[in-house]
Image (cartoon, rainbow, N blue to C red):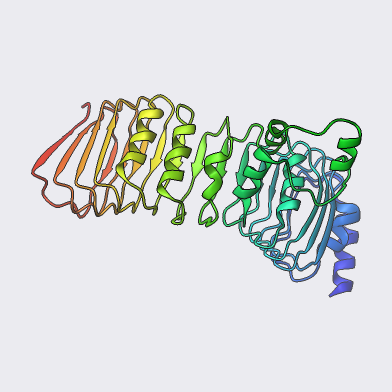
Length: 348
């Protein structure tokens, strides 16, 4: 097998114009030859499922890197100045990341269950332009954000390009709480915390440019915490997914009232705590999913000129339904009982 990979290395090293390479689920350690030679011109590289404990990837023009399901990976080193997207989904053994990726825009750490908060904080400090972060299931992530805002970042020690707290103190440059927070979440626009249990401190996390909020299945999130988060994000959210969560009507009211001109997609599937839904005068809303909201009794969707799709299957308890959306193209209402009040209208 090693001889076969040596032949592969020799052959691929001749492909000087190779820009995209996918070696996912190969059982040999592809990184043996990728590390020293193959990244010189690569723009996109996928090594999903690679069997390796350490990875050292240098890509001067690399922009996309996927290491999903690399369950044996413990230590990752990256030197990729143009990298825009890094996916480490289900790298369940990853404990150390040494990354020089200043241009990173999208980062997925979903399922990196062993990644220490100190490593996460150092990684986030080095990506000032990060816009999309998936921290689904990442332990203590929001505690990290809170600590950054109140006490400064926990640090794993001095690292390349990052002065230690002692060095900062000696130079009189101890950073403020605001500076710490700005370094962690400067321009974040999309945040996914699906199935995250430790989300109590989201209320204190500052995400001034957040547009996409995904909290699916975060059933441990307390009602007051969610309400506070939605209030802080009012006027800027475009995509909200709270599917399979437990909350009251007041949370939905805050979403709808606070984002009347920005909200384009709303997913509330299987939110069984809802009793009523009043979506009025939402100028940008184009998609709404309330499938499986078995406690929902009243639905009022009016003056939503951009709404094109409404999904409300299995809402058997609805007794009052009013939908007036002139652009509506698709509506699914399977399992709907005969409501006492019914009005559905769109432009012909």
